[in-house]
Image (cartoon, rainbow, N blue to C red; front, top):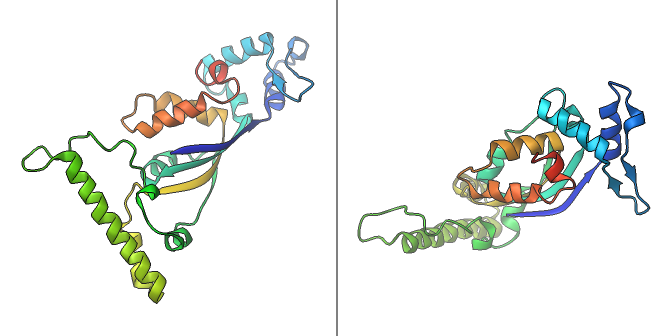
Length: 216
């Protein structure tokens, strides 16, 4: 799982909008420095955190801080991440085109943490060896179907490959959201059994003012 090309923006607009309801612009102390970086002032931070702790709708200024990132994640995580629909947009690479474009190998799947998980405890299976064998066979079947489709252009092979493609298949999407969505995710998914959510939370820590706005 990878997070690449992260971008966040509109801090200036979001914090200006935060002060609009009470017209408290005289107390605003955030600014843009000479390098173009947004610097969050202590007065604005104090108000922001009080609004965040007040919950919705007081923290709605977070919806105006935009986030964009390229995420490479397995299908099973995308199904869960897709539950966060409001305020999000995705553009994804085409599974239809990518499946036939290059060999299917272990690198195409999320396999980083499946070992040492007890799947079969009965003899004569060793769990790690058994799962290695299963994956090798499954990948071989997928690659065979891919080659048959490339050689024959028979849509039946492509359709069969789509049917049996494991949930661990990695797909890259450009994911666009806002700080409100990210904050909801890190609060709701902290400690989740899927280790990929820990990777998401680790990425969220890299965003500007994450400690002050996302993890407060």
